[in-house]
Image (tube, rainbow, N blue to C red):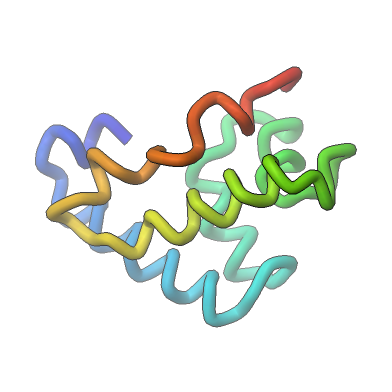
Length: 95
């Protein structure tokens, strides 16, 4: 998300809109998947973000996933700096 930190407010607003849409549609929806695809570079990473891997229902993973979506609602003024707050390296473990 270096583009947002670099001042790409259009991208930040896209992420904000996608996050709100994903939250309204709920986990498992096409909108949720569309949002998570922004952050996955491999099929394994996408599976982790969609909780279709072996981390489904692990609280710390669910917390990181929902934080990634929740933080996306912040918009251009804070998304670039806080988008990954509370996510840390949790979702990258063993991927």
